[in-house]
Image 1 (cartoon, rainbow, N blue to C red):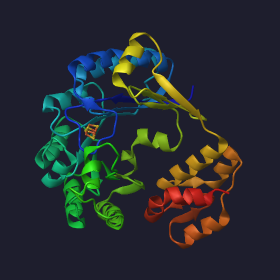
Image 2 (spheres, rainbow, N blue to C red):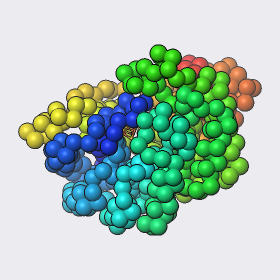
Image 3 (cartoon, helix red, strand yellow):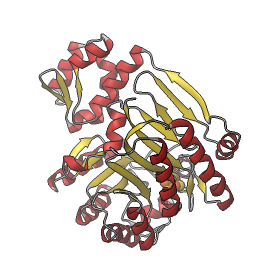
Image 4 (cartoon, rainbow, N blue to C red):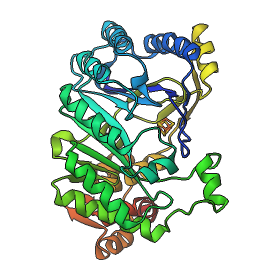
Length: 374
Ligand code: SF4
């Protein structure tokens, strides 16, 4: 069996944020009990005999489940899958959720990487986003994680928030740099239909910065973070050196197989097949209590899909894509005229047969992937 990653989705949060379209509900103790049993049951269905290299507990807010639960989970996992070569165990948390003892507990059960959803250091922006925490709690969460022994900490920031300007975004980036986490993700706010923030923007109650300002925000992040020593290794991700590149996320970009557990989680066999679980949490619990599979659908990627995926993913991260590998794996070459235009515009450089995106190129990955298709 090929080495693989394991993702577990925990669909509970203390309160739903105004922009959130993820599979998560406000915490419900009864539902949590059912979920805990269901995900352990799915673990046994899917990962028996697997050779795992990374483990990522995401959500939702997985740190709402206590460290003892994660100990049980990891023990179960170790009894049916090979976890000896796992070198990165990440858990997501949010400021204001876990007490310092809880963070210590997560470190003690084996998590060696903590991802904290800070999103902003501005009280006004946190309010617009419907976050439950203050800027001080965000900084405290990182300091507590350090005291608990985490030496690989990532934080998430959002730009393009209604009311945010370049100056405020710069302040957020500088506040992040002062805390020196090993990893910083900067995502542009995506307004998903059906969320309260989408409706507030559509109704003119709040105004999202224009796209050209968001592009300036992207380059401001690149400039401030690379000046501070961070490596811009993927369109939205920065690491304080190659040791701190997210190994789990890298496995998504280089097409390593992964197992996904929990409602809405996706799995990939490393070749052509991707499948996903029901997003209905009650349904997920019921299906697993009956010993059935929560997978509701799957897709078989065609060779053309695979080419598009290799180009899009490659153009979003520092290693780019290799034209010889593309030819070997799919029989496809790229459109040479479009590639020349990308080079002339400063969006990519060539290193032998590898096409390496610049910071500008990463921003235009999707359109350029389409242009490169022969
Ligand atoms: S913390 Fe994350 S998953 Fe939970 S509601 Fe907020 S955005 Fe959604």
